Image (cartoon, rainbow, N blue to C red):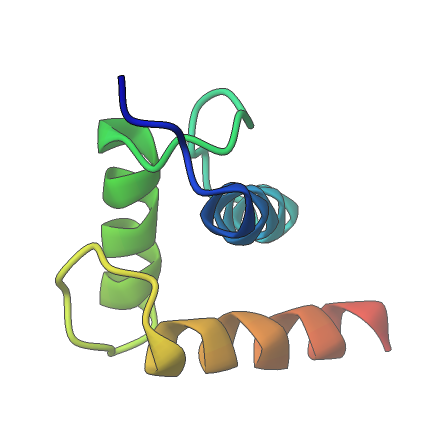
Amino acid sequence: MKERNPKGVQVTLGVQVALSILGYSAGTIDGYYGPNTTNAVKEFQKNNNLKIDGIAGSETISKIIELLDKKSS
């Protein structure tokens, strides 16, 4: 049985929480990068004129951070 990468789980949890704060539903916040998280990332990417691939890569993460910073100020 393959074990989940704890660092990957933490990153996924962070993405799920951030998307939730920004109004995107990634389903259950559980650290699992499944279809709900992928769809939430795609919706976020579409709404922010990013490449729509469902992957929370560097550009997507940077935009999430930018919007969270704006939201908190």
